Image (cartoon, rainbow, N blue to C red; front, side, top):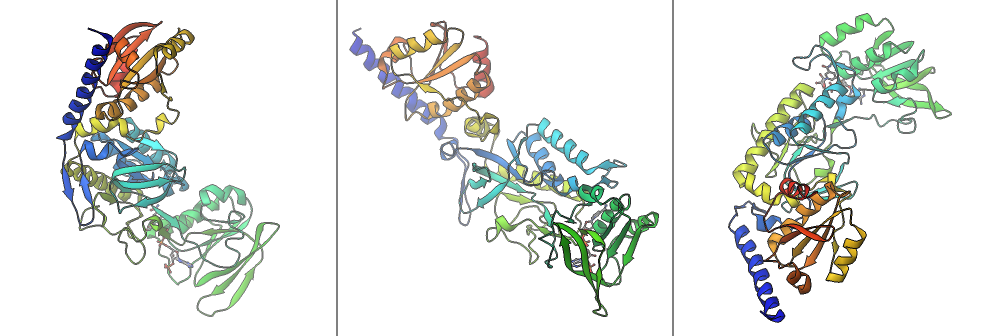
Length: 487
Ligand code: NDP
């Protein structure tokens, strides 16, 4: 056969290979139309989207980590964006005595255990937080503070709640300089000081107890004439002789000097009588929380207090495929155990919704190369080789490494699918392997030299000699093992 004839045959084979890849993918399609959105769970519709996440979990408190556990344990690729306060409010509390099955444990330990448990089943933890979400398109677009654009097939929201502030003069000016919402963090800085705790709920009692080992005098300001805290918690105050409860009193101003709190003004809520307490050096706020739902404003239904609304007894929000649990949607219980239990329900709701909508193991396998994977942030850059001379030069400079040549054509779906698979495996083995790509049609001399039977086609070169080749469609692990066996 003449060289020209050989090139024509190779070109036809390449085009046939590309078309068969297209046909192979085309028939896997499940399309669901909702009010405004089309949920098209097919490889064809999703493969163009970079950074796909089947289940994206926002937040890393007990609700989020429980949802992530159920997502990942069902083998659904689950990514957790940990948020600005990783672990949520539990990491700011001291010991927890009502986590079922454990007599006494630190909040931070609960979070560590939950995170490790979810990660063990494959959940990927990302230290970043969400800046915006767009629920007008599906897959849902999520932008992170580090600038990543993710495309979530389903979402679980466990963004929790933020401690409420008073809005009085001096509060912001001296925040972090004597004014705080976290006794466990700041109590040790108040050895021998006079401090106040604002609020009469369980959190306020906890703050006072924590402070009692450090501060000289702690006055709890309760604005009404009853405390909201549970009787068991109030009983505990009996052991703290330096804690005094002051009823019908609230704070109106915080003063400072040299960047530190030095006194406060209080008011009697019954008589309106004002008083100055000049020696107060610490103000601990424990007046409840505001749900962290601001980034969902206008996109998800909330209660008038801002909590996410759930559909019936489920953990489905007002948007299809978007679920929530924990303090972001629970104005009543606000317990770590409840959040974890509800997180399980939300995680299961997400898993069931994905499956009912057409998400399957085989689709997940096909989509794997397009998944967001922060572990690949330092991904190799696959150089393009255009002719035999360039390849020879590369070989001459890398005799200690294996070279994988990936033959592709621009419009071949299987090639688009396999290139990130090779990049992934190549990144994992980057000390021993170099991966390059060859456009099978633009570089026919290379295609002909290696007698590529179609695309994608992978050739393995060791010290310039071909030691392996394959046309197989592989997932990441299979590609990794294929390369490894030639090392
Ligand atoms: P709560 O809403 O229960 O209590 C808030 C307290 O702050 C109330 O005393 C409230 O007064 C007071 N308050 C609110 N706004 C102001 C204001 N502007 N000025 C002065 N006082 C104000 O919040 P918590 O954070 O204490 O508790 C939330 C939930 O978490 C509860 O369900 C609680 O049981 C639970 N929790 C449980 C713990 C445990 O079991 N270990 C520990 C901590 C919390 P008023 O009563 O007048 O409204």
